[in-house]
Image 1: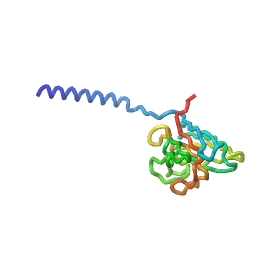
Image 2: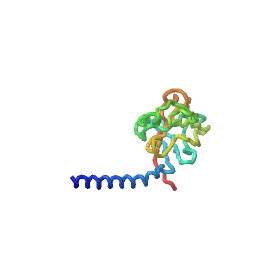
Image 3: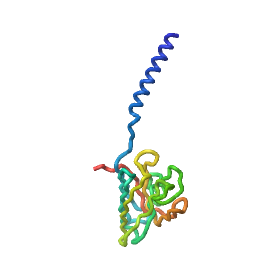
Image 4: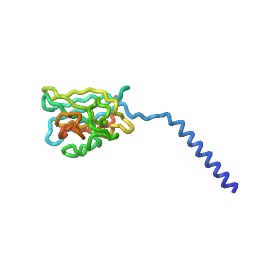
Length: 184
């Protein structure tokens, strides 16, 4: 009996000590890398289009900078983060739907309730080049809203910011997987 009580006391002390050591590290929060990038590749039938999107962590959210070439001149295109980092399907559908961990309705980037992946539209100039910069408060590089390992998709049509569930943005022109960027 004394051995069982002594053994239980030793085990309890050891578990308490381990718990205390664990609590010392509880103030450390991993926020992920500072920078991520997606290189955009054309889906079938859209050869000649290409681009990249850089995501940089900022104090007020995520700084987004996109550069896309080969779009029809003067056009506007839905621009979203999609659920899966898989662009293997010829039409880009392997990337799944818009990234939406909170199950919100589709909306524009300034809406309070929207998919995390709803980034709005990119606008091409008369030469088919689009340069887009924005800051998004919902995107992160860790946790529930992490974009790492997901995909960026540029659609064939303008996102109307309201049609459910995807903004009526049409087919997928370009797709790229978001990965950790070289910080240099």
